[in-house]
Length: 59
Image 1 (cartoon, rainbow, N blue to C red):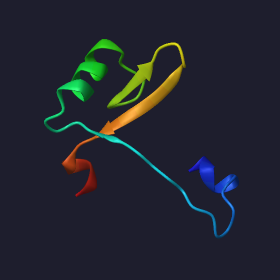
Image 2 (spheres, rainbow, N blue to C red; image 1 turned 180 degrees about the horizontal axis):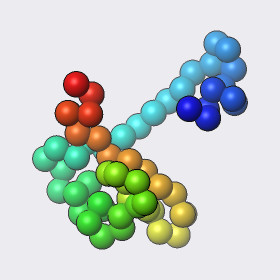
Image 3 (spheres, helix red, strand yellow; image 1 turned 180 degrees about the vertical axis):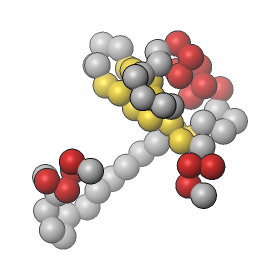
């Protein structure tokens, strides 16, 4: 968790994510622009990697 290096002691962390379950867009992104890690995709042009989650990931 690299963000602890930059986050102030009483700071906030905002996280956003796509849910893979039932989301056609998320599944399409995984299929068309797969990242190197499990359930990740690459946003071309920004060279940004994002991960999608399923309900199972949080249980």
